[in-house]
Image 1 (cartoon, rainbow, N blue to C red):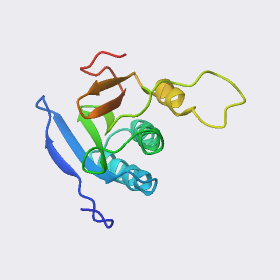
Image 2: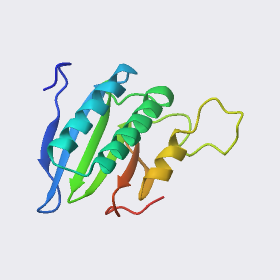
Image 3: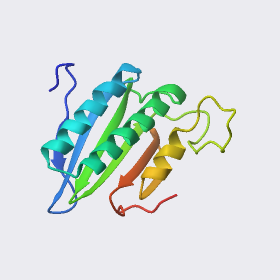
Length: 152
């Protein structure tokens, strides 16, 4: 448990060399800094390549910021953040309670003051996508290689 009182839970992933880390954080902008710190520390402790760690930090920041700004929290008032590690592949996913629209990259334009986050995610990720389920939206991105999901 970090200094902020938020815990990271760790579980075995689907493969022998796979692990899943999960946090539930308040739907608040302050959570973005906390999640970035936890992901970076966890991935560095696992000796992952610094480039992947930096990309995971940016992707988590963008996905969580979008969830806080544009979506409802889950029924318990939180947003769930997971990072899955399999060898040198890291998948980051953020689950929220859904919003008025399905997340998609903003069009290229110099006039927008926001909306570039998913374009950044798309440029860094090997694959990324959005899955709608009964609780809301799961936005995910895979760094370092292909995921076990199909990109959308």
